[in-house]
Length: 249
Length: 251
Image 1 (cartoon, rainbow over the protein chains, first blue to last red):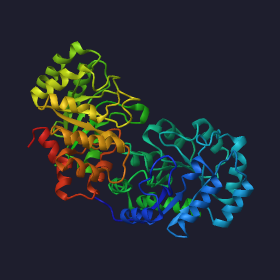
Image 2: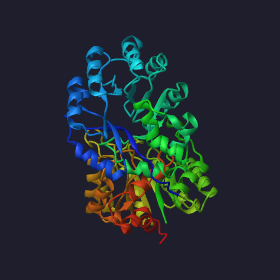
Image 3: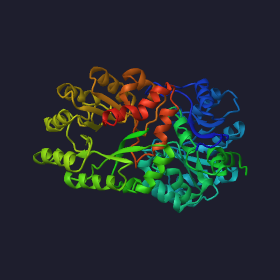
Image 4: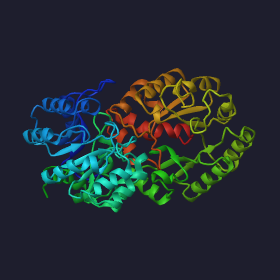
């Protein structure tokens, strides 16, 4: 019943310590060991320091933590309300960054067009993708997310950590906008993968681990027992993310 | 044999979990789950809930085992409904959900339920959550079940969700170590690293049960948690089915 191994590219991993709790797995070696044990070849990673403190500082910490390891693809966290595009643009070019993550609720601003438009226009030019956490505590109001994302169809938006409690928001958003993608890391709903496939097709589903909070091995076990074609499994496990990040395929 | 100890009858439409026996059975088949224990907690009228459970089980009696449910808000109905559920409807266990009903586990209102389970040698499964019992006294903190387990040693008490979080898991382990009739069921949307290994090391492989929370959570994810854990094959067999079979008097 289980399908053969396919290359796995994780869309949702954090690397670094938190200020308010001990993180069980907080080093590059921890992450690489987990990836190896789980059969994950590459991962998109961000630094959690950016969430509550400094984005520019935290992104720099991330690059230091990655230390040039090619298996870890840096994702910058930015604050659309308070960061300057010119500053981030320089850092992005210097570091070869291909995706950004925003956390509007945590950073205390609404994801509205008069804040986000300049960023998303720049991201469209640079062919970058945007991650927005929509876990149990959604980082953006669904109306704001819809209206803002709709204005920028060339910027793929990944709903990171979409939890089944977020279903009433995630489900209609995915139907309404075809440049929204779903990270599977917390999407545990019964038969959720096949339902997502019917809803959005195989090219808009991305495997994510939610490291270090969640063990990815059970979800990979599940994905290999969904009766997917090898092409769909390969797309979900890594091909779609490869295309988003590196504009391939 | 794989037995899922935690499943719901009824719909949870707001999170996309409408009752669909075919979808459930398909997922169980793909997860190689043979049997699932199911209960209905959605009705103020427990007789309605238990009737729906019995009807659901009757459609696939080879795949589902029904558990009965009673509401603490109608204590005068409890005993008669438990007798009806067990004797007339053939329900094999009891589900309680203290946080959902806003009654602390420590409340004396639960006494007739644990007493009934003790007399009938039935398992009682309850939602648990290891968040702060002072901030949220109704949350089903695992330690709160210890006095009931000691008072009613014939009742096998199953701590669902293993306390959900790390502190909750640790509390479940302490509870299980202090009472031989306390068991820990694993389903949760928090799939922390080493959670299964920690439960086995702490409470022992004879005291941990596989559950999925279907139809909210896919059963393949939680069989995956057990099957990918760094524990012995013997421990995996016990968690996935042997322990549940013992509690359900199937072995």
